[in-house]
Image (spheres, rainbow, N blue to C red):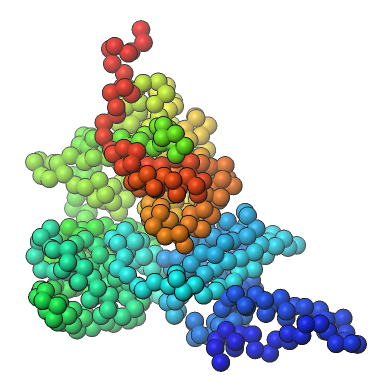
Length: 552
């Protein structure tokens, strides 16, 4: 008997009650009929309330989780899906609450690791709403084999699993790193693809991610102890049989972090993976990573003073990328993007490394104030009507000192009223009350708030619900998935509806081609940012005040 049939075994399915049946029996039959209809399209049925806890569960729970449905009563709904999917689940429930109905979206399950389609209906209750959810199988044409994830997706998965493990008091996930020996820039594409395919086959249920060409990460569930040497040996043999003899290096990156908070550990992990993409496994021990994330943070602290000096001396420039309306391609505003300069003749850091270091070491206030100051200077020298957005970390937004200094800048510079603030989600906000105070104060001065990378983390819906928001910039991974795969467009359309429900306009990242514009506009996206509209560069000369166009 299949798990689905086990889930509905014993239900009374009569078409109508027999003569003389009691009213209660008739009502029971009607209930069973509706349950049977629901099971016709789903493996599992779940009911929750506004608190997000499961109040009814039925179906193939044992097949997916190894435990009966009743054992999940009172548990958070989020426990049913993989940690990295909890953000999408939270956004789906927000849409369900707003629209009353959720079109099917795919989510990876915890436990079995399978993937099901989630759909739902919201109904009013005495207090709040009740949510009726159905988890159903993917259609055959949508079932895809596991594939190697990209660097950004892999990093987010690793961060989310580490955060979930710490919050739930579990052991951290196991992270293994495998690379082709030698210069990654010289790795031939066919060898890189073969390595990724072989790792995918040999690493079992691990999430496999390409950090950069020739350098991969394998993320295993907490408690698993993979034989890394055996994996490497089998992969080398596979490559050799395909005529691609290659030598691999491998090392585990411990994710222990006894001296760090959860948020610090997550930021340190992202920084460490970025470091690995540049230095490879040979750089892990010198960087302190043999001692876990604590050791890595100790090594990073040696750079703190030089970083502070670089920020104080403004050893960075700004490039400006246009954000344009989808309907007519006209510029709405520009985003200021940091471009670090080299120190003492050294090669400049990447913008990502520069910002990551600030967030990891708690230096975002100094950096964000410096960038805001530079952006306001650009506004002073720009033509009337030009608006520029600067990025502000969630860590800065929740600081009373940062709020006081930023507001003073804006109040004393008329051109600063053309500023926009993009709140980045790479560092999660912990003090929401202070963050809301900063956002409210900025909007009172006419400075709009934009949520950057919306959907990148589980906190996105919480921020949208808590912070006064004028614009929502949807994370590029959602945009790329929706453009490439029609199955992923339901989620993007739901995110657009969610933004509209709070009165915010939507911006799509990574818009690269005309076809992207057509698809995204049809889904209701208001604006776009990407190489299709323009690359980061100095402000166009027509936007800069010169002697010729300066008013007398």
